[in-house]
Amino acid sequence: MENNGFRRVMRMSESKAREVYNEKMSERESKIMKMKEKFAKSKGLALSERKLDEMFDKDAKKAEALLCMLENTERNAYNNPILLQNAQQIATMKTLNESRMTEAMQTGGAMGLMLPTDIVKVVRIGYTNNIAQDVFDVWGMTSMKDSIYKLETIIGSTERGATAGDVVYEKYGEGRYPSTFEREALTDGGSHTTYSATLSNVPLLPFKVMVLVNGEQVGADNGAGALVGATLSSGTINYTSGAVSVTFSSALSATDVVEVEYAYDFEATNLFNKTGSVLLSLVEYMFSAQLYPLAVEWTRFSEDLMNSKLGIGAKDMLIAGAGDEFRKAFDETCIRKGIMASSWTQAVTFDTDFASAGSDSSYEHAQSVLNAIISAEGKTYKALGRYADTSNIVCDFDTYSYLTKHRQFVASTPSSKVGIFKVGEIAGRGVFVAPPNVITNSGEAYIFGKAVQGQNVDAPVSVGSFGGAISTNPIELKNFNSQMGLGMYLDVKTNNKKFATKLVLENLSPNS
Image (cartoon, rainbow, N blue to C red; front, side, top):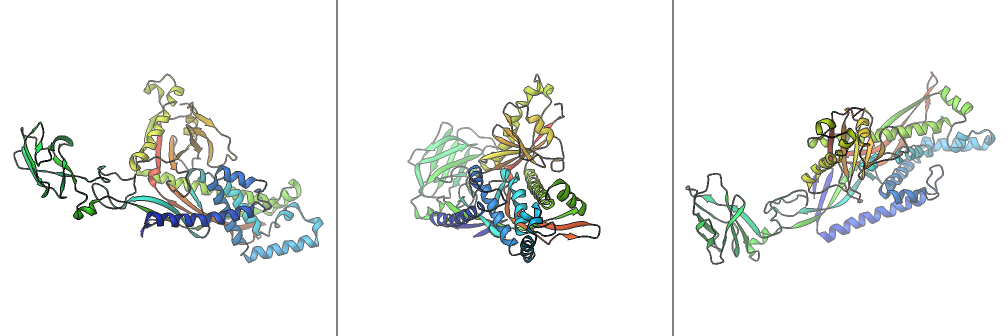
C-alpha cells in the first residue's frame, strides 16, 4: 500500500481487487436506494411524483450526491438540540393558535425559529442546480471522511523503458515492455568502423538479432553467429555470452548511434524477472469535509413587509437566497481550482482577426475555432495517451459570444442565469459562461475533461460533498437586524491537472 497526495493505492491480485471493489460498490448502492425511497416521500423537497427517478435517469451520479447531502444534513439537523426544541415550540404554537398561523409558520418555523427541515431545504435549493457536478467529478460523501474507489491498471516491473507503478496509457517507454526484446548501444572502437559490446541478457534467440544505426536496421544475424548486411564488412554474435562485434564497410560519423536489438530466451530461469507485468490496483481517493460558513442577515422591516404586505414567507425567501449563494460559491471554488490546474501547460491561442487570417468575414473565420479547442484537448491526449470521455468549456462572456458564431453551437436555456451557468454546446462540448470575478481576462476559455463512468476520477478537480449545517437560531440585534449562520460541508481537491487546458482568443472584441 502506498500514499500519493489524497490517493492510497492498494496493490493486490486482479481477482481480489475486483472483489473488494464490487463489495464497496454494492454496499454503497444499497445505502443510496434506501435514501431514494425515503426522500421520495419527504414533503417540501419537490422530490416526489417520480422527480427522483427523472434525476437518476438524467444523471445518476449527480442524483446520488444530492441524496447523500440531504441524508447527512438531515441526520445532523436532528441531532441539533436547538432545532429540536424549535420544532417542539412550533408544534405547541400550532395547537394553541392554529387559525392565526401564517403560511410560513405552517410550512416551517417562524422567522426566529429554524427547523431541521429548513436547513435540508437550503441544501436542496443550493446543491441541485450547481454546475460543478456537470464539469468536474463530484462524490456524495456518506461520512465526514469518505473515499472514492477506482480500479487502476499499472505497470508491475521496471523493464525496457517502462517504470513500475506508472499507470498504463499514461507513461510510454520504448514499446518493447510486453515482449522479450531489448536494445543496447555498441561502443565505438575509435575509427568509427568497428563497434562492440557484451549484451546484458543472455542467452539470445537466433534469428532475432538486429543491427541499428540511428534507429534504422542495417543488418541481422543469420542464425549461425554471423551478422550480415549491405553496409557491413563483417560481424559476429555469441548467443551464449552476448559478445557482439560489427565492422562497417565505410566509416560512420562521430554522432552516429550504433545499437543492437535482440530477443532473449524467456525460458531461461535467470531471465524470468525480465518478463513485463501489469497489476490491477484499487486506488482510494480520500476526502475529509470542511465547513464553508455563510453569515445571513436581514432587517425586521423586510420581514414584516413580506409577511404582511406581499404574502411571501420571509424565511422561505431567506432559505432560497442562502441556497443560491452556496451554489454560486461552490461553483466558483471548483472553477478557480480548475483554472489553476490548467497552468501545467501553455495555452493554445486563436487569433480572431479574420482579415489577418485571410478569411472573408468574422463568421467564416469563427468556424476554425473548433480546431483550436481540439488542439487544447490534444494536450491532454499527448500527455496521458487518452482523451477524457467528455469535455466542457468554461469561458468569459466575450468568448461565449464569439463561440455562438460557430455553426455547431447549440444554445440552451438554463434554469438560472446567476453566476456560472450553461449557455449551450459546441460540437458536443458543454459551454458555460463565468462572470469577471472568476475569469478576469476577456478571451479566456478553459477546457475541462471529465469521465462519465462512475468511480472514475479522470478530472482536474474532485469534490467530496457531505451536507449542510446551521450554527444557531437567528439573533435579533438592537438595530432590528437579525443574523444567523449557515454552512456547507465540502472537500475540493485538485486531482489530475492534465485534464485541464487553456484556450486564449486573441484580438477579441465585442464586434469580432
